[in-house]
Image (cartoon, rainbow, N blue to C red):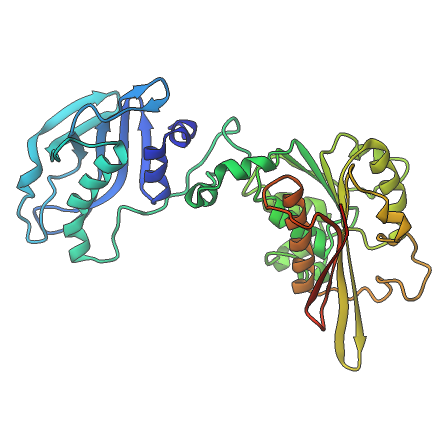
Amino acid sequence: MSQQLIDRNADLKKLRDDGYDIEVRSNFLLIKNVPYVNSNKEVKLGTLVSGLHLAGEMTTTPDTHVACFIGDYPCYHDGSEIRQIKHQSGDQTLDKDLVVNHSFSAKPNGGYKDYYTKMMTYADIISGPAETIDPRVTAKIFPVIATCEQESVFNYVDTASSRAGITAITRKLELEKIAIVGLGGTGSYILDLVAKTPVREIHLFDGDEFLNHNAFRSPGAASIDELSKRSKKVVYFSELYSRMRRNIFPHDNYLDSQNINQLQGMNFVFLCLDRGMDKLPIVERLEEWGTSFIDVGMGVQLIDEFLIGVLRVTTSTVNKRDHVRTKNRIPFSDVNGDDEYSQNIQIADLNSFNAALAVIKWKKLFGFYKDYDNEHFSTYTIDGNVLDNEDKL
């Protein structure tokens, strides 16, 4: 089955997005797992088959209204045959490993305008009686659809984008390489969000182990066995998200002046480091290379038995960098006792929100979301529920 062929054709894609289990096999279109009733009034599953007429890689108007079926002859709920669509019965070999048992004829005035209309019509006729017997059955089963490496960075088809009609917009995020430096609470949530975009390669940098406290401020739910392994964070998260997508590269080291060249060639970098001192050489080199980046920060304090604080997102692009130093938008020192990380209180909901703000800004930079403000510095104050934008382009 070619997912690329399905993606190029609106009628085939709509069948897939509606949840039908479709397959293109040679010059035939199949819908599998179609429920029907047999003569014994039992609910069974069969396969609808239609010839597929193409002009190059584009579907044309179906050249015949006839469809075929693999299975027993479909019946009404009382076991009597659905005779109004009966054409002929008897095994017929259409292709290697494709033998059908029956053919149907249900011709509307003017014929079928596309394969979506044709296949949906037959599926509704055949499965209707089965749904009468068991309302839980349906031909729209939304199967998991695997992809090959040439088709997608994902291990299975991104039907979320296609169902929403935003596939073209999502392609704006097909960057070649991005990096996430630091996989603490916020960094791991950034990975969770970015992993669901079509970025070609995601590089992870962190030298720490994944321990109990990390599990309580990271996405997912680590098991005791996983925590007992004391895996490096980058290894744990790369294995976790490799279940969903390809090309996640773990680098189990801290970045410093000696190895910072590992970031060279990245299209974008997320900085999610706790220590301000570690950021300075990285920021200097990213600026030198002309690399855009986002730095995140979270300052939470315990005051009078309540938590208060501020979340920060600082953006630096080739079009605007002056605010980073002139306004001290990124802390580069850890010596001040009032430093935003001095207490290092991190909560999962705040980490995830900080990550979401950063990823939304990243998507704005690449045209996924409309950006009216073009802010390069934003803060969210917890106690007042206030989001402020500054340093606008």
